[in-house]
Amino acid sequence: MSDLLPLAEAIAHLAEMLRADATMIPFQRRVFGALDQIEAILERGVPLRRLATALVRLGLTDNSAKPLTEAHFRAAVSRARSRRRQKTAAPAQTRSNQTATGQQRTAPTDASSSIFTRHAAARKKTASDEKARPDFSGGLFDTVRKPRA
Image (cartoon, rainbow, N blue to C red; front, side, top):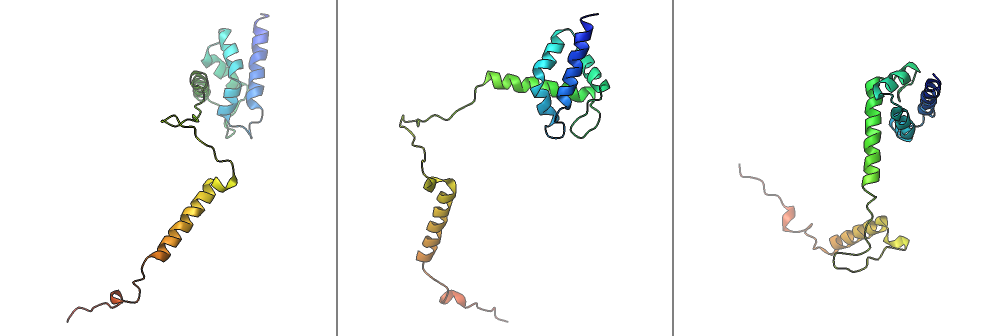
């Protein structure tokens, strides 16, 4: 009986953790944050379905303040487990500072090489190219021939 009381307290504490900041933090993110506590309760021999039922009975709600369903909770736990596996299995991919030929890449250090200034420079170049083109506006191409009747 002494083991049941801490288990009930652990489930009640988990429910409070999942209720905290319910208006600010999406439910899936709250489940991901509490995944260690969920796993600890499951390791004590409580099936996920029973844990979900207990949380539903404690009045846990989802993002839209609707009562949480067992299926929704089980799916959220499954997604959180999957996300944790992805984070631990594949480290963050970082871009190498070397090109395929082995040359060192140089990172832009000044504001003049930002994407916005590069696009502005490209637009200026296009505008200057258009000014250099010949002007056909006042020649042979202005008269439109009418078809004969």
